[in-house]
Amino acid sequence: MADLSTLVQGIQTGDMRALARACRLIDERDPRAFELLKQIFTHDGPAYVIGVTGTPGAGKSTLVDGLIRLYREQGKRVAVLAIDPTSPYSGGAILGDRIRMQQHFTDEGVFIRSIATRGHLGGLSRSTGDVLHVLHAAKFDVVLLETVGVGQDELEVTRLADTTLVVMAPGMGDDIQAIKAGILEVADVFAVNKADRVGADATAQDLQQMLSLRRVPQGVSKMQGHTAVSTLQKGPEAEAGEWVPPILKTVAHRQEGLAELVDAFAKHREFLMTTEAGRGIREQRRVSEFQAILYQALIDEVDARFADQVREKLQEVVGGRVDPYSGAEALVRSAIGDENET
Ligand SMILES: Nc1nc2c(ncn2[C@@H]2O[C@H](COP(=O)(O)OP(=O)(O)OP(=O)(O)O)[C@@H](O)[C@H]2O)c(=O)[nH]1
Ligand SMILES: [Mg+2]
Image (tube, rainbow, N blue to C red; front, side, top):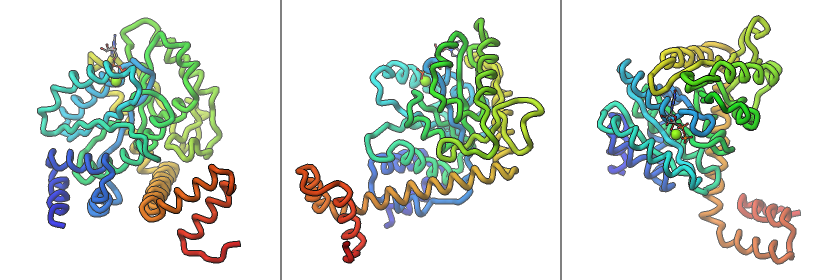
């Protein structure tokens, strides 16, 4: 397929149009995307992936904007994936982000792309994972993965990141209490943004206290093997080989505290690359990715080849003639060609 090899070449040379085309194939779940991903895959992609999540309005987009600028000053090539919400509330926010981002659109070293939350199975995190491989192949130095909202889908996406930044802002004390435990557990680094406002110290302290209450025993993997391994406690109690998420204060629109943030990211990356715990996390990520790809491939295959049988069986189940367990079992047996039905 000459067309595909041109595309592969375009990606590997960082051609923006080729990148956009590849993202589109993935987004549309074009069968050629699978072939493309096979060809460009590398085991140790060079891009360092930073997930950015946090409470609404805390300043995530402003921080991402500042981080792009900082990394660009260091001569790094940066990609930004904005995980678009399906929520109707966020239309305005997204528009604002677009305007803010515009200054980067003409920069050859910055690639910006939104990923829509399509309804398909395993959808958002799977297609984001595929796009990440495209960005690895294009040899970006840094990928910023900004999620909007703190739902389960968004938390799933942060599992794809090497390092997850959770952004909070002062005056959200009650919010912090209300935040699902999930968001604290995915954090590798915390930013208390809007530190120019009163209450930033109190928020940082609240956060610190909440983290120490949530102390997790060493070695316990959280959220199906998510990245953060930490006792979530500072000081001498933290045992060797564990990551303790630092809490940093930032003023995003003034670029304050961003250098420290980048420093903390680098330390976390170092932890991932050089420690036993870090190796375990990276291994677990490969396991989860393979499982997700395998299951998706199986589902696609079944959809393509057994759609009629599935529909028939479904009618029997819905009509109460077959129980769902027997129905599923019969389909699986016929799909794998096992005639020894019991
Ligand atoms: N005072 C102050 N305002 C800030 C700071 N950072 C961001 N803001 C403002 O806070 C508002 C929200 O910032 P965004 O960056 O859009 O926040 P967000 O977390 O991306 O918001 P959503 O995507 O809607 O959840 C904007 O008006 C920013 O200008 C800061 O450090 N200090
Ligand atoms: Mg935003």
